Length: 296
Ligand SMILES: *[C@@H]1O[C@H](CO)[C@@H](O)[C@H](O)[C@H]1NC(C)=O
Image 1 (cartoon, rainbow, N blue to C red):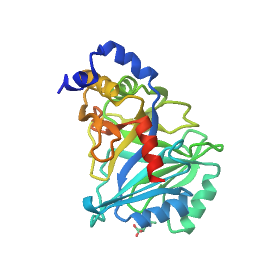
Image 2: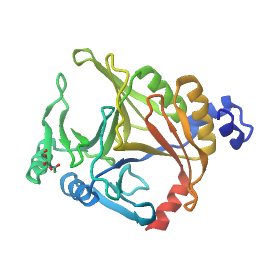
Image 3: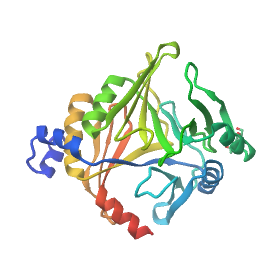
Image 4: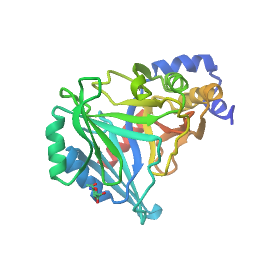
């Protein structure tokens, strides 16, 4: 396993690819997760959150359908990719997955609208404890939590994916080295016994970031079977896989799919689990754009 990715990528020494990863132009593309009723979720996200339905596909041979929703086109914006598996109407979200976040100019107003449309508010709008930013939490029809964050207008309202991790230092190192993400900020909150790290590729007020949460003393979470993965674009899945493979030797995690084209679609991908078992798929950037053009 260890040498396989390296062999496929050619004779590039690990030191060089570890530098290359910092230059690779990556972007967070989408989060993939399963829902029990595609139309119900589409209705909720479009009516309550104001997302747009970007594309939909049905694959009867494989007995599933997908819907892509977001606040802007997939060429520029992070989106959600919903998967509906024929006949499965319930999933276990587990304890590890945290939430998605949506930035809005007026959280109070958005909450009022969502409530009027039958949505469930799990945390009323108001300032963060000990802080000034206004937030609220909403539960979608499958039980996924969305944090609403009051902010100035942003090109990327779908702004965070929060995942819980068992060792924050290890995760920060992994996401920096394996994925070339920047540590944008950390917040330690001893009163509530947690530390968070915001990681991403650009300003967190302009792009989607991963929010990693460490709860003091908690090292294990359940993954359930609802949330699947995030997808990130790369200029080279082969080099990316080589980097990830090298970093997993040091920090844990593993490649779950060697780099190469998906049969039938030809988009080149590679996928792996981070040290906590969170799945990430790396997608060849130009193949991804070709795929979008084909589906239009
Ligand atoms: C709100 O919660 C109730 C009770 O759990 C549930 O029956 C209903 O489907 C939820 N509504 C939405 C839109 O998720």
